[in-house]
Length: 433
Image (cartoon, rainbow, N blue to C red; front, top):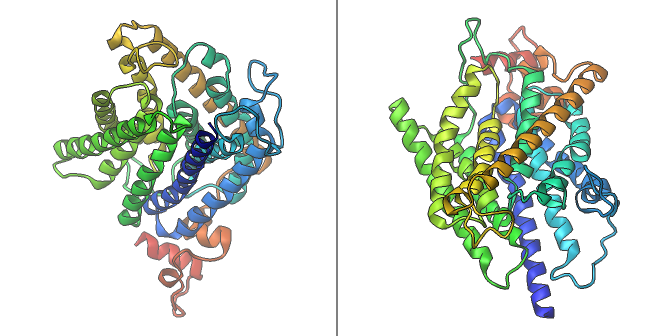
């Protein structure tokens, strides 16, 4: 029994490390998907925002999610987590704390996708605290902490709703209030493609996220004794593969050329979609779930663009729409044998009951995350005299305007002494050209 305790604890810590390493994937994904004048800012704010998320989770987040004496919304104990082990647990409860801390950091990183290339650094800082206190822990408690959605049998094994949809709804609130980036839309309403500066970074970021997702999903088994984590990993890999292939093929069919960013988004969409159902469905179903997610993300990106919602790293499509589909999919494909939470899905004799529970969970969770995030940002906008940097700062780039240096200094710190423009405006002019 002691050996099993140690093995389970090591497995959970390995999962936590993989999930935290996903922050590196998000740095490359977001930096590569945006313009080089903001690359250093994006990389740096990802690290410091994870630091904020970790401190807040230690102080109150873990207690709100898993604490005892809970009310309708949150738990009410285990604040300022002391790192004490609970006797009789099959794994280290401190390892479990670190694992859950990693998830809280990912949810915040997803939310910040909607802020990219135009939000003040101070807005990131304040919203990181508020989101980590008032948004993520509430939904996580409802579903994972024994809250009211858990009592209804809501299935979300590793967080299609808790992490991905929650982060995406906060990103949606931000994109609406921040409004599109300069140059994204023309006066006639048509959209311009503000291409990311490094597709190789983006692809490498997706690969790192793919690897990290084995900690995300397989690590959520919280044990090794029956080898079930390998089955979860298999479903995760198959959904990602199907998402990549289906997204590439649908872009090829629709555009006449196979689009690499769409393929990368399809890979992530497949991963997001299978996150809810990876432990509840058979492998053939994981292929279908991933393939549908890859197709959905292609059309979703274009749908949001037509609505003039500027989503630089496609958080709404990859994490939001795919998160919705993944959560619903358990109500369709969950088998009687694997559905240790809730009921079997529609295809396995469960009728519409579990599908209804999944739909209810999506509606209330997305509604809460969006409404609270929107109100928080609206209040911040009033108190902080706006959420967005000035036009001049945005054109020059957040690297120089918020931090005083560039992520790519050799590309920007050039000798243009003959120019009549100040250097930061000259650099902005060069970027536009």
